Length: 263
Ligand code: ADP
Ligand code: MG
Figure: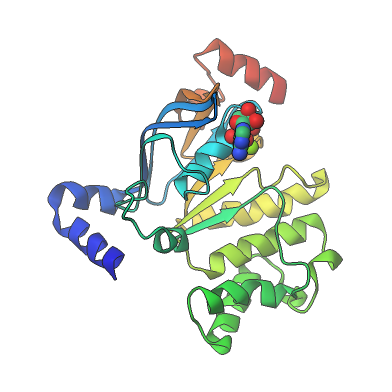
């Protein structure tokens, strides 16, 4: 396993070892353009292991593109992205291996409609991780319990509320036992009364020490849970700091304007 070796090598190299130990994500000088449209204009951002970082900012500011560059759903135009010590922008990296360590939850839940909840949680464990049915189902049930949906394992997604579907999507990601979770506006598509249950699951996950990079408009979640808040506008990080600082006492006019609209 080239990547396992690389990870071991990183641990023994004092410089890289520190990065591999403490830094879940390091983004340096990240640029992304779609044709003539420059969407990310030089992003620098690090996330330490166990840290919860919330990214906020207006629609079109590049938040989703930033997240998608972390697991190479988008290919950066320039700059580097390093996940757990592995530079994912290195052309020689085994990107499938890196992606296995990263869970992603989208605004649209993206469950397989023709599979039951349990099958949604076991399919990638079996196909990607090569787990047998028993072990995949044990892991799936453990994670359904974490999101409070043990009684839904035989249901099809269409029979579930949006909030339940999103919790299944979170349980599915967790069943792959990722080192890191990316959330892209996980509650934006939900009816307001269903948002709380999803945020509660995310809050519990943060409490367990999961490393999380979360794009959200839920300022109360950011205030309570985030170790750090990053405000993006126009493809750049305008300011970052604790939630108390960025949300409670923003320094930039653009941050203040944005918060005035969402709070
Ligand atoms: P946000 O998540 O902050 O709303 P996005 O990262 O989705 O912002 O989008 C930033 C900009 O990039 C938008 O102008 C969007 O239209 C553009 N964009 C995103 N993905 C693509 C794509 N695949 N092709 C062309 N333009 C894109
Ligand atoms: Mg987005």
